[in-house]
Image 1 (cartoon, each protein chain N blue to C red):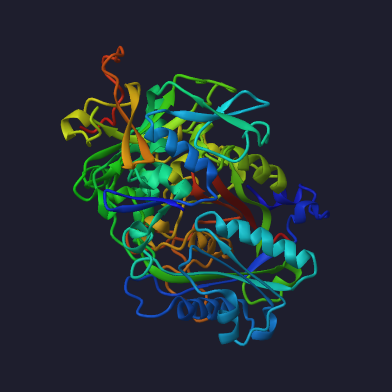
Image 2: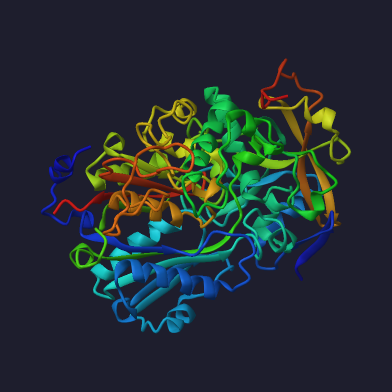
Length: 173
Length: 422
């Protein structure tokens, strides 16, 4: 059976044969962020793939990774495209570098994980909160359930972390 | 750039087919919203115009290529309508970056003896049917598997998908919105001298940065236009092209859908402010035996103002990080050192996923861009080179052009064309 659920009015489907995404999102529903680690390379990868991007090795195991990182870049949407996001603007998509494996295997590589900027409770943040977040902000992962076996990872401001005095924001404000 | 410096590079050999193939015909429909006709009808209209331009009839065309994203009509139907019997065809999935890549494929299949002359088309109702901005059917489609990692986050349209690259370029290099707005200023100036452009109004930097934000850093006027149209170019051997009514636009080099590492999720491989042109440039310039300084006119894809800037920078028209300055100092405007998208491009003329930019450079090389300059008794347009609003848009003495096609930050295509030096 495909894993299927309604999320904000969007129908999300993971087919039976899509083992990699099934595993990834199932771990998320247990509030675990797990990534595949290639057997030969020992390197983690995101998003799920069927082989190791550095070696082509098809053998891997799912290992738990701490869901903490730093905003590398972002999207701040003011004009919604998808109907589901019509009443969410402005909203933010965060692309954050996980602390784990940052700068490996080459200097500018990182596990850059996407998610919306949410409250700790998994609600979209206010426009005021968006204005406090930019490149350099420390964030951590939270999970929002789609079904009882499928959750989406999202980002929230890491309140325990030391934050930059002024994260970089698009200047026209 | 002079003609003689082109001929210094081993023109007697067919290294990478340099000089062996040409664009011999170009054509398009009108650029409009609400075409009220099918993509099949638009395609036959554009191809007919290109065949007329090439002085060819249906018996002269035996190959066909098209590209689309489930929003067009495939070649066998279009060819049948036009009485063309195909020895080769292929309909390819994809949008931006397809034009130059398909030109390379056309050269390859002709070289392999599979056919003699290929018509390449793009037909779309990008405003009235499958909207290029991503609203409508595309945004309402169910979300499957790998798409969950972006679409479930409201990360779907082209502007949304590319924004992390654009913002990070501002962060890494101090690029400003006012600098990048220079692209719209230039392209709108060019469009005002293009009677067939959808938007012919000139805009200022202030107009761009005061228009509403779509998704940061993109204002409304940083974004391209959605239109209904079809375009066509015809590729054949240069020897054959010399028999056509118009001078050949001779293909010097082509690179197709060149990718950054991790094309599936290119943001994993930084710097994310660097785009595919960084890799494509090495193929483009070495195969052409030319470099950026040799180019008279560029056609850098303008899905957004930023995509033009990023590509010009990564293909080496300026130093890395100086793209903002390059697109705002007058260089890319008509009358400047190296004008870009003299038709107005996707920001103003119409959206065709790249093909109208190749058509424009073909016409620039011929010296007969279709502006409002007077046509003399011999049917030749007498260009004034006065770039005032409503005037000329032909660049003087164009000998070599470059097209820089864009699919996304991680994927691009490019082509160098030159005047026929025989």
